[in-house]
Image (cartoon, rainbow, N blue to C red; front, side, top):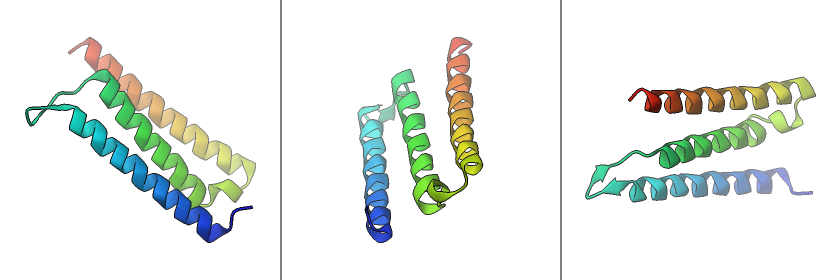
Length: 96
């Protein structure tokens, strides 16, 4: 079993790596200093943000050890936010 401090350190490193990953996506999305949004880049950024949210809920807000109902509620919240954010983006692209 991983100690709590080690687990938090690992979570922090993963969060930092996800942030660096997002910066890499942002770097590749620019063309001559001008950002060019695409569906893949936008959905990727949203998914990275949701993954970070899940890690923060689990490791820093201790939902990992919470009652099953609370764990389910936080997971459903992340799923609902992801569905709404990606859905709104995709619908807006259809009418853009």
